Image 1: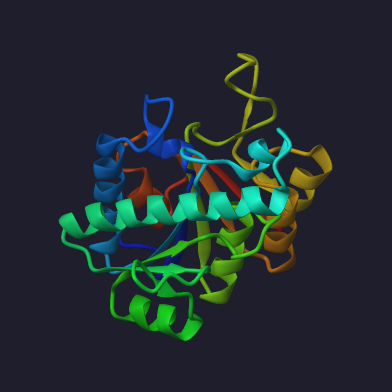
Image 2: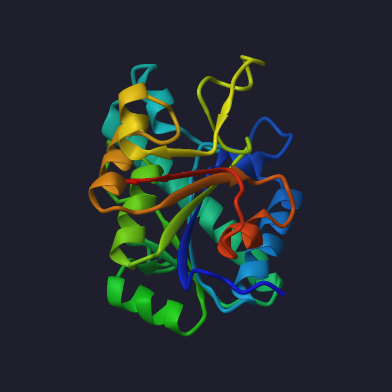
Length: 239
């Protein structure tokens, strides 16, 4: 069995990925699949944290485009991430993992408040920590929250599981001639305005030299491959 090359990681999963083939909501089959993939890296002894989006339930940016106040819409989006986090927590624990959900918006009955030192202690004890409610502030996406939390907990790498197998120069869904980019720098992503994450998240990761790997959620075993250093998907860093 290959050994992991990282000791502490943060995994970013979009809310849309949890829909599966549905148009809305959470797919139980996708949740079980994700739990199995997470378990495959936890059993290697890797300290694992997760940020999950809320786009399968509510997207603040989309709602604000229809006239809703952006701050109100973003707070609704944060609550959607809490729903996803609790659902993910339940299925992870069904797979035998100990978990904690920490929310940037205090809601003591369903989640711990986000406290950095407590999160670090959970990770050291082998618990999977799920960071919910983004940064707790409107106008910031869960991508930015993922980079921020990764920096705070000193994660060695941020891995982002998506519906495609890496970063492309064009949208591969609408353009069959799109070419996948195996390696790229953060500055190139900004200059070419490639939409892998929002620009705030990319800039924050670049400023702090946080490596990012983008890979397909759909291919079984990819989580373990990334953690063990195999070359899959797209790697973004400052080199």
